[in-house]
Length: 186
Image (tube, rainbow, N blue to C red; front, top):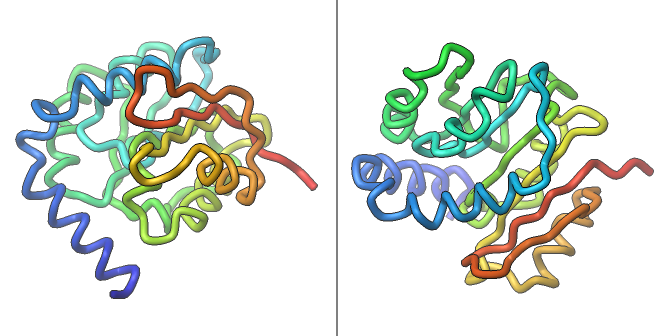
């Protein structure tokens, strides 16, 4: 099966479940978000990207702290759910796009989140490289990886191979690993 066939299947699955996603996963997603934000600094001039934003659960945590938040997802119907959540804020913009081919400039975001994203992608390394491309030099990059998809060693290796420096890694009480990273330069 090609990468695009897998992505179409993923898009279809999220389109079908968008209306019940929060009922099924909000508690789990909120725990990941809170773990990711614990100790993470964000200033009023911050530009935030939520790659694979889903229903926009992150928005309520970052929109008031950041200048601009961009939510990007491949599923149109799940973005419609995110749009409802974004209506409460003036600084949230939504983009229907593939996280492997983001229509965004290089080195622009001070904070990039990929929560519950990479295990859904056909080529997680490609996704991590694209996230790295749009992140500023000293950006905080938050990536989660489901424990059922990766061992801790596999997750750490995937991040290191994509030239990420792991600053903090959290997994206690979570179904995933949550890594706060920066870019590595060679």
